[in-house]
Image (cartoon, rainbow, N blue to C red):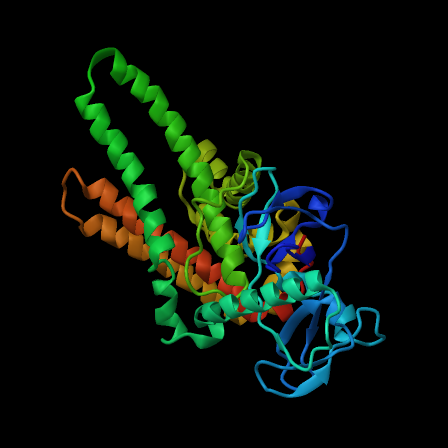
Length: 380
C-alpha cells in the first residue's frame, strides 16, 4: 500500500500498490493528483506507549511529541536499522474508500500526530504546505471522537449504533426506499410502460446489489481501521469495475462456503445430519473468509492456509464472533416471523436486515482491528 500527502491540502491518502502512477482526485480538496511510485510517509510506533504514528518522510530526524503519552522523541529515518519504520504495517492500514473519476480508489486515512520544535522552513511553498497539513491535522482531531478507543458505551452496545449516523441511516433508506418506490411505480403504471419498468427494475436491483456489496466492504475496511460509525458512500463512489469486483469477492466467498451444503441438499433431497454438518461448517468459516477476502481485496484471501491459521490463532474470540453473528441472523428471522402481515411488511424486513447487515460488517472489521497482530495478514 502506498501512502502520501496531497500536494495541495496535505490530506493523507492511501492507495493500493497497483495504482502507482495513476491520477485521481483528492477526497478532501478535489484537486487532481498523481500517485507516487512509493510511500512518502513513515509509519512507526511510539517507544513509550506503542501509539501508531505516521509522518511525512521529510520529518525524519526531527523532534516530536507523542499525542497520547506526551513523551518526546526523535522521528526515526525510514532506513534506520531496527527502527519501527522498517516494519510492514500495511495490514493495519485498511481504510474507507472514496471516489476518483479516473477509476482510482483513494483511501482516506485519518492523521493522529502533532509536531513541535519544527525547524524554520525556507521555501514559501513549503510553509504553505506545512500550514495546510496542520489544518488537516486539526480536522482529523475532530474525528477522534469516532476512534474505537473512545467508545462512550460498552462495545457490545455501541456496535449496534454503528449505522446510527447520517451516512448509515441514509444507506438504510436507500436500500429500502428504492425497492419500495419501484413497487409503488409498478402498481400505478399501466400497459406498455409497466413492462418497460419491469425490465428497468431488474437492472436497478442489480446495480443496488452491487453497490450494497461494495458498501459492505467499505464498512469492513473502515471498521478495521478503528472507526466506530458508518462511512460515507454516495458522493464517493468508485468505478463500476471496482464495485463489481467487490461483489464477486463477497458472493464468491458465499458460494464457496455454502455451495457444498446447497449442492448436497439439491441432489439428495435430504436435510440430514451430513447437511447440517456442511451448513454448520459454512457458518463457522464464512465470517473469516469474508474478512480475509475483503482485507486482501482479492479472492486470493480465501486460502485454506490463511483461514485455518487465522481461526486457530484467534479461536476463542472468533468463536464469540461467530455466535454473535449467528444471533443477529436469528434476530432477523424472529423479527420477520412476528411482524404482522401488511403491504409494508417486506420493506420493514429489508430495512431491519440492511441495518443489521451493516452492523455485522462493522463487527467483522472491528474483530480485525482488535486482533490484527495475531492475524498477521499481508493486506494488498
